Structure formats: structure tokens, C-alpha cells
Length: 298
Image (cartoon, rainbow, N blue to C red):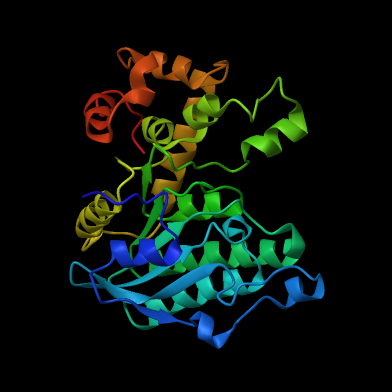
């Protein structure tokens, strides 16, 4: 029986992805580590500040794991939230964990803590790269209803590998932000099909922004995370200048090739995907089978 990853909360997800009974939470709600900024603004607080962190096993491998709670401020990052993520990544280095699994669901930085949140996200980016430099692979899972946007979208792309469902979304700016800044003619945030075609897992896979697409099933995310960790273990996981230059070249080629496209379907057609209009209806396995012959290599 499948269990929806989308409908689960942060703790449910982390327990479903890691080995049963292996997760030990760090700074749990009982310790009441809350944001000092929210209280000053009379805003609601959460005793874990919207992120669950801890250590456990993934098919026997010792990993550090974190899951953002989309039900609290959309998973947005504040000072304490970010500090917990940074501390977890530094702990992974200190304890020489075999991997870090980040279950991201976030709209970006909290407006309530704008400067502190921005600094926190930059520190998370640096900590991800430091973990990779210490030869610890970082794997990101995106499948929550809030997607992964803003600075944390950049954090996700700093990781070694991203696993997404079609329901998950990944981008720098969210649809509402683009519409507010440039008008509905640029991007209609109410067109949900367009939003998912543009930022959803399948489009990101075809463009090379994520490396695995799975169905909305916690067991599928777990299996993909196990495969990813196995694939990365023993390989070079640090970010190299060569890899960074290759990524930049890929982005430049994408702009040159698809810069005039008005809809992702036009991009899929240019990639040679047969019956591109049917992509949103395909199950993950069938989609991957078709897409692998046409996707841009990450």
C-alpha cells in the first residue's frame, strides 16, 4: 500500500524515508527552541521552528537528515530554522556521516526575519558545499505541496542529487512572485497546469535540474534515496571547478536554445519528446523511460 509523500508532514516523511526505528531527533519540540523574532512580532511560533533534524540509518548507512514542515509558515527559513540545518551539516562532517538527506519544502525566506533568514540560507549553502568537500554526499528530496523556492531552491541545486515527484516544484522565484513583479502576462500564477509544467518535477528532469522523478509515494522516495546514496558512495562528491563550468555552459545553451519558448511544452517538443502534450499524465516510470532519450544531461 502506497503512502502519499505529499500529504505527510515533516516527521512522518523522515520516519518513512529512513530505516524503521532508526531516527533520533536533535533539538526536538520538547526543548522549545523557537525564533526570537516571531515572538517580538506577536507571530505564532513552532517549538521546532518548522524543521525536524536528526540522525538515523538509510538501509544501514549512517546519515543525517532534515525535513522542513510546510505546515508552519510554508516551511520558510528564519534564523533558528537555518541554524538547525547548518548545525546538522556540520555534525555530519564531525561524525563523518555516510550522507545527508534533506527533505525540503519551503517558500524561501520568512519576510518576518528577512535579513536573518537570508544570512541563514547563505550559511546553509556554504555548509552543504563544506559537507560535499568532506566527501559526504548531500541528497535532496522535493515532493511537498509548497515546493522548494527562493534561496532554498539554490541550496537544493548545491546538493549532489535531487529527487522529485511531479507534485514537487523547484525554482528560484515562485509563480506569485513572478506575477507580482512582471504582471500576469508574464506568468499567470492561477494557471495551475502551467505552474506545474514550468516548475514541476518532470520539467526539471527534462532540463537536467533534477536527477530522479518518482511517484508521490514515500516508499518510492526512500528507494530512490537509497539508490542515490549507493551511487554516490565512493565517488567524488565535492563540487569541482570543472563541474561548475559545465553547469554554466549548460545554462547558457538552454537560454540560447529555448529563450523564446512561451510554454514548457514547446521546450519538450524541441527536445524531441514524442507526444509532449501527454507528459503531465504519465506515471513516473513511463515518463523516465521516454524522457531519458531526450533530457538534457545535468
